Length: 79
Image (cartoon, rainbow, N blue to C red; front, side, top):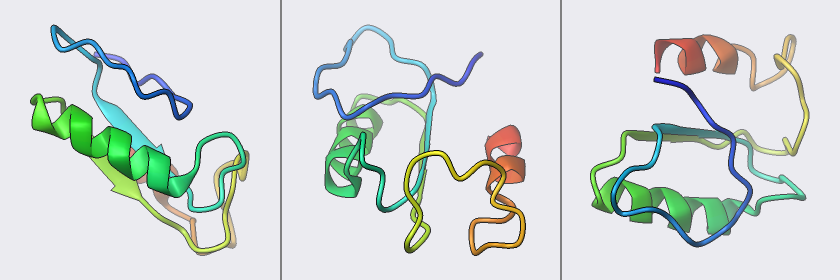
């Protein structure tokens, strides 16, 4: 099983989507509201999902060391 990063596209394959892990609140590529909607749709068709929102963080904050997002990578690995 792999983890794939998505932008905010609204289509999904009802016959199979990969598990989806989302981090961030202010991502300029994929809005929080759009990603929450996507996660809800994926979960509704049985896809394993997790969503974490870190206030003030957008796209590309790396491992988040020394920030409120520190530890997100460990959560993703456990996921």
